[in-house]
Length: 305
Image (spheres, rainbow, N blue to C red):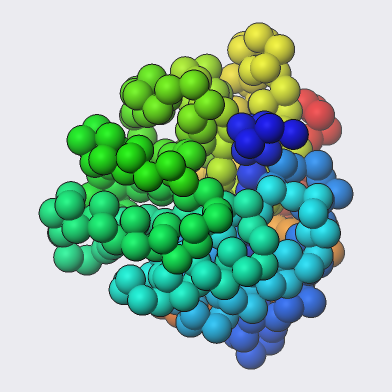
């Protein structure tokens, strides 16, 4: 498998797995990993937004990644998101990830302070230097990070030979096209917004990394299959079904990640725990909507897969 091929496909963003006391549960991490292996996804993106990274300690994130790597048994491409609010802890996570043999590390830009681009580049390169034998993926999510990956910053980061990909979660699909064109042959760009996977793939994305992929991987695998086959109208139909489910899951009082974990408990028998504060937990009034979402997923899979 070439370097590019191991990143081309559907890569769920891995959910945080907690016990009843809200602590990271290694057995539950392994159960989710094995579940995703069985579903046939390309890999997992560990420690990102879906992994509640900003609400976890460095120790939490290390423990999660260790159990993912144990259960994956080399059957998944593993990307570890290692960004923290300071460089030192980000480097610590990068060194740890490399020691475990992940395929790549990834990082958002520093958040809160709006740093100049030369400082962002330094932050990313410092993290990359802590894992000198591991691919580096830039995570562009301006709507949450507060800063965007501009073309001058992208060109500066391309001077680092370990930078092999961009996870692009900005909304304009044109950004995917621009990063693909500027990145050149072999450079990987992932579609980030789940709601527009068809559009992202059509304009050149190599695959997708998504927060709702884990709860309904069958639908996203089908979208990728249909787009690859040039059956765009059919892919659009599946995308519309997936989007309707996303909108329904977002209609609860509880956070989206809490909803998806509960849906997976209903559909797959997986116990993944809740979410950490300040993310809002489910309330009893959410359960009819959660059950509706689980049924919508079942119906969509039966119809399209």
